[in-house]
Amino acid sequence: MKAAANARLPVSLHARPAAPSATCSVRNRKKLKKRKERPCSRSYGREGNISFGGSEKFMDYNVKPMIHRFRQNDMNIVMDVNSGIVHVVDDVTYRVLEFYKGEGREEALSALEKEYGAEELNEVMDDLDELIRAQSLYAPMDKNYEMAIEDKPIVKALCINIAHDCNLRCKYCFAGQGGYGQWRMLMSFDVARRAVDFLIAHSGHREHCELDFFGGEPLMNWHVVQQTVTYVRQQEKKHDKKIKMSLTTNGMLLDKEKVKYLTDNHISLILSLDGRKEMHDSMRPGVNNEGTYDRIMKNLQYCIKHRNGEEYYVRGTFTRQNLDFTTDVEDMLNHGFPAVSMEPVVGDDTADYSIKESDLPRVKDEYDKLAKFFIKREEEGNPFFFFHFNMDLWRGPCLPKRLRGCGAGHEYLAVVPNGDIYPCHQFVGREGYVIGNVFEGLKNMKMMRDFRVNHVFSKPECVDCWAKFFCSGGCHANNEAYAGDIHKPYGITCEIQKKRVECAMMIQAYNKLKAPKVMHQPGTKAARKAEGLSAT
Image (cartoon, rainbow, N blue to C red; front, side, top):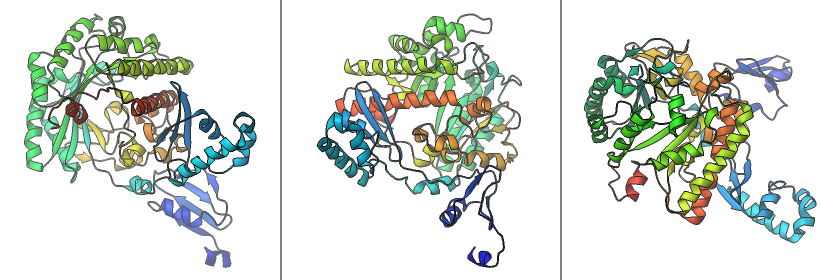
């Protein structure tokens, strides 16, 4: 650049994987002006352009230290975003952190001296300085994130849509009530077998993989489920793999034979039930619009009773019709389901069941109510497991998962009955999202890269968000369907997720301080240890 400047010649620097380091090398020479074109570029005075080609959007990855403060359940909670450390502080410290960030003592003193006094304020800021030096507050970002961003992923998990058909007609179903807007068909064992082979072949040296049976309703193709499980167990031994299997079911076809088989083969279960009878029947009718609650309740209760310590939870969906979903959670607990979740419905704004932006204050209040109910149950010695409050602040997900979330489109893929491969089960049936086929292999590598580089630092809305390492930029499928772009977070789900994270943090802080009896998800290592069972 110096030689070019002396010669009054332009410079063009094009960088693909070296984008972050290339940026660092020129950052301090002149103030660079952002341009929004793709491939992304920055002008460099009259000396030329620096461009970053390919599908990766430009970000400078200079993640600033930041904190998040909030009050809940009579606790002042401060989270350091980059380190993930959570502090419970007194009132004066909470107020000081509104102004003080390791500098700016005079501003804090000016704003708060009349209320607390200079001596107390300076003592608090001295303590905060110690936390900042220890990188427990306003911590810098771990440099390993750059390596995690550029890491070449391998396929870790595969969703098998083993049945594109369903025996329910759920009103909010993203899968078009089983057929995904295309066709109703069942997967053959040949396709399922090739899907297992695909997972093993593309998982590299990774020992632990996951395989999910999904639909539609997978139990409608029960014999192929059984054949696939047998094949998985054979291939595990052959290739030194450990494949964890799960199955999502509405419970209509669960019987003694199936429950025993799923339990004996250590298959995790996600069981669908929408809380109260009236809510469930209104949203999850049968093919003749009949109520399904009574039959499903009977089957699920039998299933839970005979899980013998295997992993499961009961998953519900709340809509605009039951924004008082704490009542539904309590109803499920009263019917013998101590491990539950309630997911917010995601749908078009025109649907009467869809959650609107105007509903967000009520939804947030309900999560506060649910969190208080959760703690009350713990205080009474009768805890339950709620999926979205299950946050491990001490060991957590790994850095790549915090950056990219579920890994859809590059680490997690879905296979449909004809063998086509999609970025995930929620993209099935959407035009332009076929990545390949289990008979022909992966074809659209450009799409896979687009998903791989779609992390929290490639989204301007996420970079400065305190919750980015807990939501990972949101669901790609929801972002594409309702925000119009997989790279653009969907605002409604963002707000709901941030509230859930705050509730989870508060509960974790409470549990750390009070050490009540807690419940772990059934079947997990922690749960089995608590029950005195073998961790294996």
